Structure formats: structure tokens, C-alpha cells
Image (cartoon, helix red, strand yellow):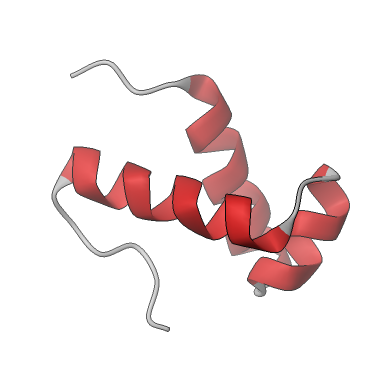
Length: 52
């Protein structure tokens, strides 16, 4: 399974920050785009990574 490193970097930022909003600010991306990327990573891995 090939996972884009950008998706992993975004996952780590959300985990570090504890918030999608703060992670989006840290990564300089819109929060809805980050949410979509995290959902994409979850779908690729077949697991839920965060409790929302």
C-alpha cells in the first residue's frame, strides 16, 4: 500500500496539535481541505484515525 507522505505529514500535524483547526493553521491549508485529506487517508488505510 502506497500512502502519500503529505497525508502522513498531515496526520502527524493533527495528532501533534490535537485539533484539525490548529493543524490546518500550522500547515497553512484550509481546514476543510485538511479534513478531506484525513478522511482520504482513513479510507486508504481502512481505519478511523481520529474520534470526531
